[in-house]
Length: 227
Picture 1 (cartoon, rainbow, N blue to C red):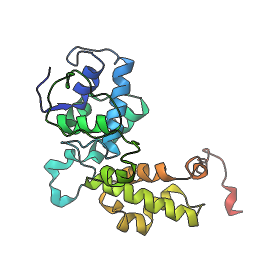
Picture 2 (picture 1 turned 30 degrees about the vertical axis):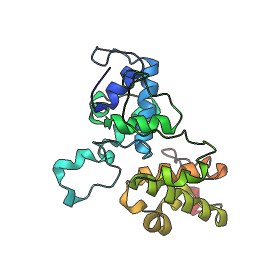
Picture 3 (picture 1 turned 90 degrees about the vertical axis):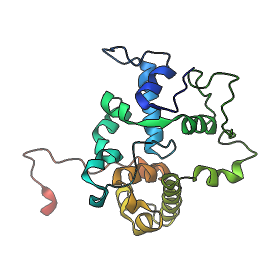
């Protein structure tokens, strides 16, 4: 049983898959890769709080020495992880998750807390939560899901976007992200644009979400739009 109060995303992903995080791996096992994507996605969505990564935008007054504590500073490694392209060990070891928050996230989503950190029968001292979607707590779900700033902002942006799309079904995701209501009322102005885009995209109608942008013009092909 691990008594650590916090572990890195790297450690959790390996131990959850019953693999050694300290061993050299030429290629990460499939279950470890899946765990990495799951955890990073939960952090990015604001569902799983991360001690060392903030979703807000970095501002000069925050100090240059703290820039790496903002998730946008690691955007390339983050996107590569979510896309399954590569798994930056340095980035994944930078993300630190508390035992309490990880437990609440697992139980909140109906995931069995892994035994390596939460042995069956052990008294954890954590207040349990019912799984999301439990009929006894559905009416309280908006409050439960929005207990932290990033979660509140995500819910607010998605509710606002959903209402705006009802009246303007042709609005693109890019335009929605920049909409004043999303930026000001939803609090999107305080978060990286890529983060807000992911939030908004989840609330977008299927036809908007699947709409492709204008294809890039091939080199040497004349632009006939001006004719």
